[in-house]
Image 1 (cartoon, one colour):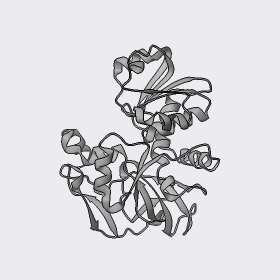
Image 2 (tube, rainbow, N blue to C red):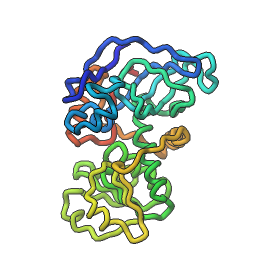
Image 3 (tube, rainbow, N blue to C red):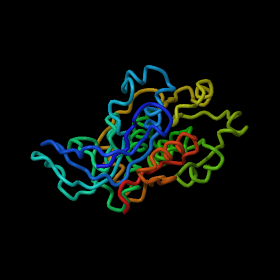
Image 4 (cartoon, one colour):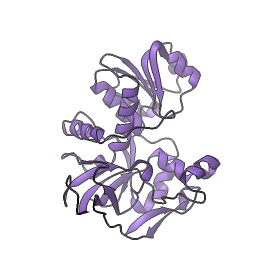
Length: 301
């Protein structure tokens, strides 16, 4: 099968398409023919570990990633199942989150049937389904951690990224009063997703903002600590994607599937690239101008 291999640490050109062995499912695994995957910020961090120092290399591999096929979320169809698989059958359309096991930048992947996998929303394209899991599960984790409840005042910093666009929609769905902070060109997008107030993060309005919130969620890990403290009310909670690991739950995929099918949650997609252009997709994501998700299309629908 074809796969994008991270041949070393460095710029996007270390990503190269190669022929590798097609995986064979074990008794408890399913073989998924991947239709779409995404380029998440975490993929770029792993690929660019060279500029982040030795700690990441110790975590992921000294000369190149131990798992050289990046990609943390995907959608596709099940082509084969192991002898003991009960939850899924051949032909099922699914979406999945692989997390730190990666493996999405390829034509096929084997995953355990009890992994973070769900049937695809019936009304979702494969591109849309691929864009649901990472941002959605990350947003759910941190909003729960912060104690999200109806009528709470929530500020989401970085509201136009993959996590931010999911967090705006989920917080609004659960009855919060949402303020989104993002770049000027993305104000309309964030407002359309459910934010009551949207603020340009470069504006004087944000710099001098003296409002306080029950929850301040830094969805990109870049909010100044002093500013975060100023924005969080006395009994409020500040949470950030830069603080702590996400607990991934299959139940969260089921919830995202349900909300998408009920048209209460959207997949925010910015650009699409064919799998062979993974390097170009990485270069775009690293500009910091990504709106929602960037898709790598493996199978054209």
